[in-house]
Structures are given as C-alpha cells and as structure tokens.
Image 1 (cartoon, one colour):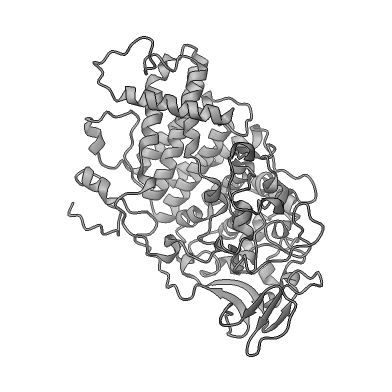
Image 2 (tube, helix red, strand yellow):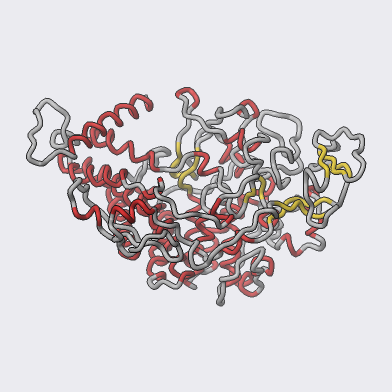
Length: 584
C-alpha cells in the first residue's frame, strides 16, 4: 500500500507541477487534474504532502555519522579541512521548497477547514525543516514563501539574514503546533513532532549565536526551554526503560518503539525498503567504523564520577574499563558479555571491521541481516531524549537551570543508564578537567555554569551517538578545532595475544619481529597492519598521514555553489573565507 501510494503521489505531483508552471491565462479542461481542481479534500492533500517526507535523512545519514566521535578508514572533507567551493551542490537545491509553497498556494481549495489547516500545518512543518537544513549549512539564505514562476525577479534575489529566516521558521512551527493532530504517530508528523523540531531549531540557533557572537541568542534559548518543557510535560512521551538492556533494545527493535520515538523513518524488507546498517557495522569493507578513545572515556562510572578520575585509566584493557560504567557503554559498543541478537555465545570486538577496537552495536540486528542491504530496522528522526537534553542545555546556557530542571530532563536518562543523577551544585563546583581540556573537551565554555554545561554536553554526546547530531553540535558550540586532534583507539601493552572481552578466547594477536604461531583469528604486525602511539605499545593511532586543518574564519559555514552565484549575478554573496574566483 505504501509503495502504491508513493508512486501515485509522484505521478500527481508531476502533473500538478507541470500545470503550475503554465501561464495563468491558460484554461484547463474540467475533467483534467489541475491545481484549481485538486486539493479539495484530505485525501488529495495527504497524497501531495506525503512526498515531503523524502526530505528526511536516509538511514546511512543517521547511523553513518563520523566527524568527531567515530573514525573510519576514510575521513570526510569536513574533518580533513579540504572542502572546495563546488559549482553545484545537492544541499543548495530548492525544488522541495517550491513544492511546499505550491501546495500552500492551492490548499485553499480544501473544502473542510480542519483538514485544510492540518495539511497546511504539515507543509509549514516541512518548510521550517527545509530552512533549518539550509541555515545550519549556509547561514543567510533567501526566504521565499511563494512558488515562483520562471520569469519572477525574485529568482535572482539575494540572501535573507538568518535572524529573519529563523523568525519565519518559528512562525511556521507555531502554526503547525496549533493545527496538527495532538495524537501520537510513529510515521507521520504531529503536533509533538513540530514541538520537537521547534526545540531543535531554537537550541541550534540560540547556541550558535551565543558562541559565534551573534545577538539574540537569549530569546531563542528561552523559546527552546518553553517548547521543550511543553513537550516533556504534555506530550505523553517518556524515556523507554523496559528489559535488561533498554537503550540497546530501543535502537535494535525492527519497528520503532513509540514510547520514546516521536517520528521514525520506516523500513520494510517485504517492499524493498532496506539499508545496510548491519553490513556497515560488521563488514571489513564498509569503512571499519570505530568509536574514538576520547569519546569512550566520556562514559561515567555508575556513581556519577568521571572514568578519567580513575588511576591509570589510560592503559586499561577493555575488560578493565568496562567495569562499573554507565550502562550505555555496554549497550553502544562491544564489551565483555555482549551477545548478538539470537546468539548464545559472546561476540568480541572485531578489529578487522573496526579500526579503533571500540566496535559500535547501536542499531545492530541479528547476523542474518549482515548481507549487503538486508537491514530494515526503523531509523529514529525525533525522540523524547533529544528534547529532554535540549531543555537542560538551553536553561544551562541561559543560567536559569535548577536542580528540579535536571530531575525532569537528565535524571530519566541517567536512571536508564544506571548512573547517579547529575548534581547542579557539584558539577559547577568541580568541573571535569577532562571536559575542560581543549583537546579532549571544549575550550569555549566559561562562566559560573561551566561545570553543568560540560556535563550536559557529555550526556548529549553519549545519548545521541550515531543519530546525526554530533557534527552540527560541534559547529554550534564553535569547537571545530576538535577535528584536528589526534585520533586514538584502544590501548595495547605491546606484542602478544589478547582476549578482548575476557571470555577465555584469544581474539587478536599483535606481533613485531618474528611472526608467532597463534590461534587468534586476527593477526596484525605492529607498524604495518596496526600503528600504536608509542611505537611497540600504546593506543591505536589513526590517520597520522592525513594533515587536518580547521579554519575558524571559514569552516563553520559551507561555501555557496558558484553556479548559483553566477545565475543571480552576484546577488547571492559568498560566505566569509571562501574564494570562488568570482568578481562579484
């Protein structure tokens, strides 16, 4: 049914958009599909607006994030610092905006007011989402709320200040919140999805402005706190905490868990909607993703104290560093006791499929789905945990956070993780030196709330890992220098056999000099197959042959494609620091 609906939607859109491009003087036959004869009822409005959902990220965009928390065999251009000014870019396309504005122009045809307002709410939700994606990449962008014809002079307009664009986005979201269904739906946008997006947009823009020296950040963070509080208190969503491994189960469930997940992207193998999550996490040829050591170090001990306060934490084995940790540690990466779904034996980290040794298991399903493109676990797009974190971060940045605020936002996440609740006074009295360090932490957090802001960032890093947030968090926090730090993985004392998960089986042999006889399934020569920070011992060290830079004057925004600068005769200006060779 979904497939048939999708095909019909595309066909209808094609006919309508062709009709919409015709001269207003043309007259359409009464028995043909035209803008003036469509959108008469809820079904027709739904058919058209269904296509807007294709704007959401694909599964690989969500689980495949790297940038700052996961290392792969190849580094993205954002981390390398070698982005180029393109002639065109998919992220600068505007066709979906025209579809949205086209619908809003003709939705007045809908005969039942409640239906019209609902689907206008859907369209305005997606217009806000469309512009959120544009603003966070490019900053100032042209604001358009009408579908332009091919001879409209506004096709050549310049960029609208981001402050004005964000105000329009908030207006769209407020309309959506007021008119969308207040019921809960896993696969269609509702009032609660719009409220969650409002929380996301205003947190991003508020903190971006604060840390980049742009006025108006306080107002946006107050809006974020209010929207988030409304969601927390009235939506009915909560932090899923059922079973012995609730965090792992939340993401490995084939069908999205509606207790916490507000909106998901559906996948279904019976109609060919699949992705390659399992292959990505287990194959030797899909980038070998591994969590970085400094991120692994951020997981707290169960008593709420930093792992990095333990003596000799730098040289611990995986078995040692797994003890008494935040439960998300063992439910995010392979560690002692981990068993794949449907299996009775433990699965140790596989360095052939994970270059840091810290192998992710978030989203991972049973081994039967390891073959290429056979995974179909749903992908979360919005979930309650994000809104909880947005609430605490916004109030912390404003300086209005109380212990009661922490108790309704951070505490539920830590309860699920088996970690003692965050204390506002203790965090601010004793900021974690590891998170204060400009290499392992953040260099731009200052003020009386430094400690609690750092703790909320720790919580966000761990809770939202592999959900597509981290790169943009680094951008809004003005912490791009993190991309240039040395990337480290697991620690090894030197050549020898290693039982990585403590189950009594040798998982890895490292050697130097003469290759030993070993039963290990993976045998690596130090200095050739694997590189250690101290030569014959130390942490796995990665990508030292790739010099990385981050330009503070340039790299927080993407360059505008040159074709669009030329088409607008320079009315679209280039972002600071990017030289595109054009003279206007």
